[in-house]
Image 1 (cartoon, rainbow, N blue to C red):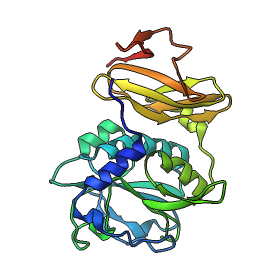
Image 2: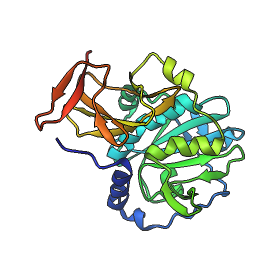
Image 3: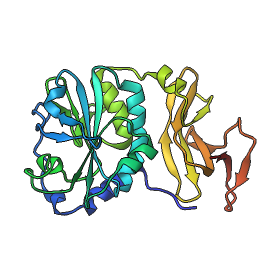
Length: 277
């Protein structure tokens, strides 16, 4: 049973393996105006960043070729459920190495927010990714109602002991950092009432994550969200057989509500769920 590296580690690996632009220093600072741009969405609708002043905007740079970007999609989907409203929106820009139609990927992944696609380029005059001098993927910029950057890919947060810690604004950091910056609680009612995906839940005060594996990929770690006395996480699974377990008090446990428990071949007991067509 192969294990995935934690998401942050994968992002670091992806950052170190990108092209020469990874050597460039990020020139943005909190308080800078986000570079404006005009383009079209994948549906052919005109888009200009500055037209969205008066809203908070998450500008998400990703690529279909980028595995860490794919791992981040569930976080962005959850962010949309928790925070999206008239004053907050998400804009994803797919940075591709070859011309391609990403409609099918976006539809199959349920990425139902504003989508833009472009060819990768280091030239700021030729692409949005060049304009933002990207050095890693995924990269996320949180922009305030005035059009100023309030969080960018690499930043710092102050820990409880007063020490400044470097963090990536990506993956599992997206939701807590965004909620903290916007001063908003998660909209758990909207999250739980959604008639889509597969909801994993456990009644345990110290649960942390659901750890899940499918037939064709290694184990993946998905943080859970507190709701009353339970911890929950919604995942969008394609048809297939999956094994999973929960992390509670830093220990692995099977789902106490699921009687379908299997041995993974190494002596470990896991809960199993079958997703049908």
